Length: 309
Image (cartoon, rainbow, N blue to C red; front, side, top):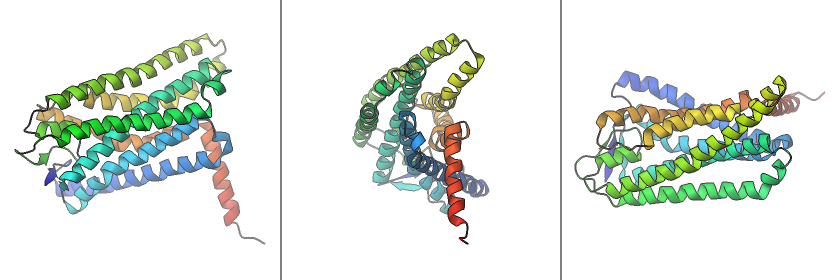
């Protein structure tokens, strides 16, 4: 009826310290992502395809960190490590959905930068509103279907040997390790999903950046090269950070090794907790348009707070 989450540590002193750290990270992630969404929505200059995709990315960040971190904070503060079976399945479903959505979004954002740099005259036609909205909806739906398949297979498994999950949230690798039934079908579907996501997301991202780099090298002026590269450098940082940690965990599921699950548990902190707070900071601090929009918003706020004479 319920599972026990092993968590990150069994030390009470360290759990108190980690609670403060993760509470700060969670609050910062929510505030920064919601502020970025508000800034983009209120600034007309930011009503472009790139920032529309950035809104979706911020929504995914809020979604994904809210699936895992509140339970982690509860575990660290009141030392209640148990989670109900249905709560575990729900957490697995929502997190895999958010993870797949973010992978597709980051790859499509790479294509957006390719269209902007390599085909600037046709950019408004290629990335018109209907296309962006349709692809965004398709990304969310495709990730939801993928999550439904994996969650449905987990529901068919039996868990009879132990109820201790070697993780701080319900994830697919530790659940496969825990099952006492045949997991070959789930592992095969996971492999198929990895190949599909790898070809679609990594393939589209790498192909886009190959064309982007070729276009940048053809620019004669140094200033032009810097300007072109600055438009995609933030996204390249996020992609490298996120893809490397996700590929390490899911590209080859290793349900038979406890040591690999221990490593996966800490690597998963990168894409489940750290990435949602890093993404808005990278896109805002390295983006002149976003910083100008933030200054405009703060300037309006000061005018509203100024007493009228």
